[in-house]
Every structure is written in C-alpha cells, then in structure tokens.
Length: 129
Image 1 (cartoon, rainbow, N blue to C red):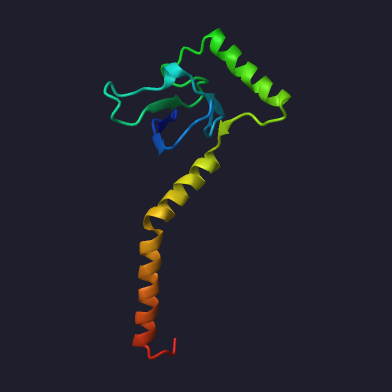
Image 2 (cartoon, rainbow, N blue to C red; image 1 turned 120 degrees about the horizontal axis):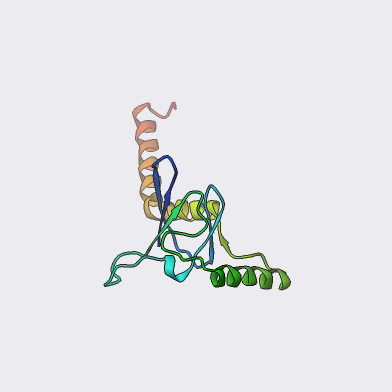
C-alpha cells in the first residue's frame, strides 16, 4: 500500500508499506483508515494508495461519518477491555521494516564489496594497515 502524506506547505511524502491495521501514525497524529479511503486501480494491478492530509482526521475520500468514528472508538474500547494495545501502524515500525527490506535486498552485495575492498587495500599496503 502506498501512503501519500500531504503537508500544508505543499510537500508530499510517499511511503510503501504493508498495513493491516485500522489506524496509521503520521507526524501530526493518528489517522483512521476506512474502506472508502483506499484508492485502487480499476484492474487492481497497481498498489492501493491512501492520501493523508496534514491536520485532517480522515484520509482523502473517507466520509468519516458518525458510524465510522463510532465503530473505530468501539474497536479501541474492545482492545482496552481485552488488555491489548490498539492496533496502530507506527512510523518507526514502518521505517524499521523499510530498513530490513533494504538490508535483505542490498546488504549481501554491500558486505561482499566491503570484504573485497578490505583485502585489496590490505594487499596493496603489504599487510601493514
């Protein structure tokens, strides 16, 4: 899923993440996700997108009707009564996930290059490094 965060000064920040929660944490506060706030390609080939505007509770396209807010608050209350934290997609968790994905994708190549560079430099200076 693509998260597009629009700030009031005209910047846009885009994240790719796997979100399975009902709320998303952004720099300003938590934003609830509803079914009508997720934008999808007609053929469902591209990733779904959610457009979140800074300072607005619901994402772009969400009606955030009285029923949606009531259901969200009810889910939070049920989680509290079950002694569970509310399910929120945190910013640091998404950042850590992107870092792990980067390590899995490029980490082996970078480590091999560093390994080769170390031994080449050591051989060039005659092992006096």
